[in-house]
Length: 454
Image 1: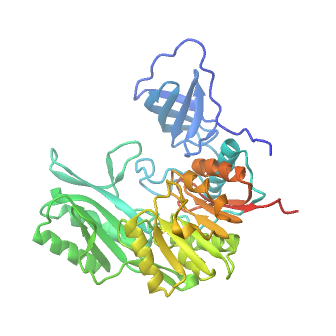
Image 2 (image 1 turned 120 degrees about the vertical axis):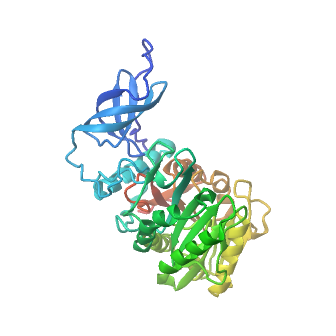
Image 3 (image 1 turned 135 degrees about the vertical axis):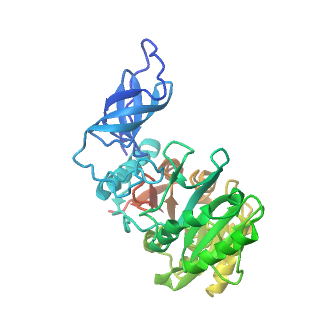
């Protein structure tokens, strides 16, 4: 298949060395296109500028944040000529909070950027294009995020507590009183949280705060020193007022203030409930997660007589629905606590044909007892660094179908090239809009053995 050449254009490096750029210097730039991370790209005097807050086709005045060799990181300070696509940013904290960097871009254009990113990475690193592109899986633009970490820092010099989210390209904390991407119950918690934390007698003991929402809301308070009794009581009252569980974490693992209260979420289409603890990996977008699981089942099409392998299985987000359709599912995860949680979820949901195993998936799988009988189909959902070692061995497991869910198109493309080398063809691909308003790309790909369909 012909390779598509759609990568970034860099200016030639020959000629006289340019004078170093000072942080804070301003420069007028014309933005040519968007990078994969959503920043605008411009070229001046042999340098490539990556400009946050700028859209393709715009003329901006940008401030230098840092420079190395011929690469410049900058931020748009003024929009001198706006793109016709630019919209008013829905969040009042846009441009200062580092969380949502694409708010000025309409949602349809955000999806197009993510689609281009996936296609370009597959073409550039694997020389592949799918036989069929799937429509993007989407959910609500706002009100989708069911998990968030709130930065908390005691400023000893000023004698005050800072509460909010990290700023763009900085360790500074932006005070946040509203966050439109959070689910509604967590928005209410966030609005009231700063006043609670500022009123504590010993705010110096706070590390950070995490918010969760599933079958109920939960608040995890990370503390670096024991909490005062009065402060603990204030936290309990706050959680009761917001119908939230209180979890505390000192030196060890998070502990529920009321241990009998489970924290979990439902996969409603399959009648399943998965319990978890703060610190466990859970997809932040419930609507897209359900759509993702449904699409994975449709694409992989497990049959009742088949044995299926789920790698990087976590709590069982894919494994439990797979087990409802397969003869047997083996779910493999590297973190012992997650394996135990997965086993508990399988028992709780009455799935005796689902078996969780622990293994280091960065090492060869040969010799593992669970791999000996082989598998008809494999699903894998690895972290950002991908699954190259595991992918190298999939052909030996006898799998005819491989479904790969990715949170990093670059490592997906690398691993896709390995699968292609084993005789798998890229049957389908599509993006999953798990994080609207950001440039983060999640994707799903299906690989099949055998000749292309006619």
